[in-house]
Amino acid sequence: YLDSIDPGRLIEHMDTEGSDSQDNDYRVLVLDDSRSQAHFIDTTLKKAKMTAKVITDPMLILDTLEEFQPDLVILDMYMPGCTGSELANIIRQHEKWVSMPIIFLSAEDDINKQLQAMSLGGGDDFLTKPINPDYLIRTIRNRGKRAKSLLALMVRDSLTGLYNHTHTLHCLESAVQNAQRENTSLCFAMVDIDHFKKVNDTYGHPIGDKVIKSLSLFLRQRLRKSDVIGRYGGEEFAVVLPNTAATDAVMIMNEILAKFRKIAQSAGDTDFFVSFSCGIAALSPGMEESANLSEIADKALYEAKHAGRNCVRL
Ligand code: GH3
Ligand code: MG
Ligand code: MG
Ligand code: MG
Image (cartoon, rainbow, N blue to C red; front, side, top):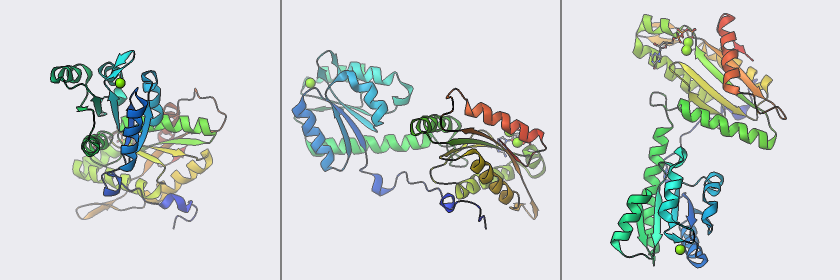
């Protein structure tokens, strides 16, 4: 049964978002120009088993966001050269950070100034110093939990639960960066169900949906946990295969195709069979980065369709 496939690939994809064990696992970036304050917050967060990163220089905020990828940011209000609300505005200009919670921290107890900071800066909370550690942790947990579950919804396709088009491309982008940094190979595969219009026309749209879900489930079961699977379009899927050479990717996708087309899809009391076509783009160590993997995979997919469908092309 699929003996030529690396057993590591058979590990089922599991969704772990929202599980209890992860509830405390927030990545929190703290910016406070006062070292003693920064240290106090750092200690408080670590005691609550959060992953904290503390910086004291406002100039480092954007680079550190990119590097640390926090779930939430805590900003001191008054710092030399800029205010917390000015920084929050700068952060919010980046699409990627639009929904990330920002908590202001300050000794400012004038409610009007607090209000002004909140309305100018796109912050979500204003905590006053001296900070009550329990209150700080509770605020982070509440904000963090909601932000994480919203984000989890935003990146997924609702029919299949797979990553959506946009998030799949984001994942491809970071996978390419990783592969280049670590000098490893990477493949990107595009999968498109053959003659899917006929399925809809013959059996109806809901049965078509069932076929899409069936392929989605099959890909999840057959690929590694580290592979990224996305619903790229209606009946199109995309797979990012890190640490995978071109010949292996071709073999894996051929195996998946051979098994999938044997699965009986049922429509009432009739069974039917569905195949797909697949185009693969490969990035090998040392290759020029200019290669646009999604364009190349798309061309390979077109060739697979042109060659009569039901096949894999590199
Ligand atoms: P080919 O082998 O060339 O890919 O043929 P095809 O019929 O699969 O190609 P085409 O891309 O022209 O048709 C895809 C069809 O998939 C058209 C559209 O109505 C249908 N479709 C798109 N999204 C969904 C969906 O979410 N559910 C269902 N049931 N059908 C969908
Ligand atoms: Mg300060
Ligand atoms: Mg299509
Ligand atoms: Mg199709």
